[in-house]
Amino acid sequence: MNKESIITLDAPEPIGPYSQAIRSGNMLFISGQIALDPATNQLIEGDVSSETAQVMKNLSAILLAGGMDFSHVVKTTIFLTDMSLFTAVNEVYGKHFKSHPPARETVAVKGLPKGVNVEISMIAVLDPVVSPGT
Image 1 (cartoon, one colour):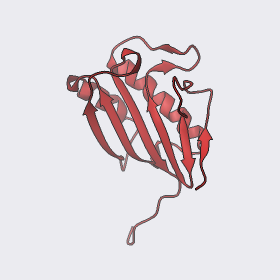
Image 2 (cartoon, one colour):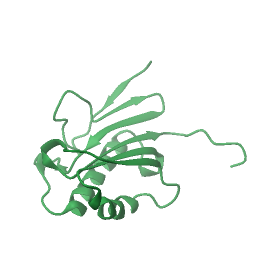
Image 3 (tube, one colour):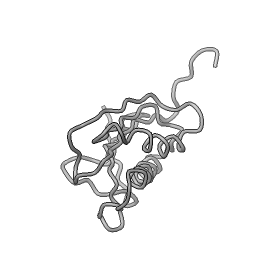
């Protein structure tokens, strides 16, 4: 198996023993991102919409470092500390997927790193397999 760490200064450094992302073949597995500003390594202050916007910015930077963008994302997982935040997070998240949004689950959790409200992870594929007839 070939496995390559993807690292960019345009996204927060990992706060534990993990990589921002791992590329294996044509797949990119992005670790969960929270609302850390990569320039200061400080949490973005504001409401959950502001948090989500920073999370998506961090994810975009990692995708770019891996040679991809949101159009390559096939699967996401959203972790929320409270399902009442779902609508606000969904509104910001949805702006990044104009057509063919990825498969996804949204899970309520008891807590997230650094006390944030939202964390999102992604799986992206470069040159996905095209189904017959498409």
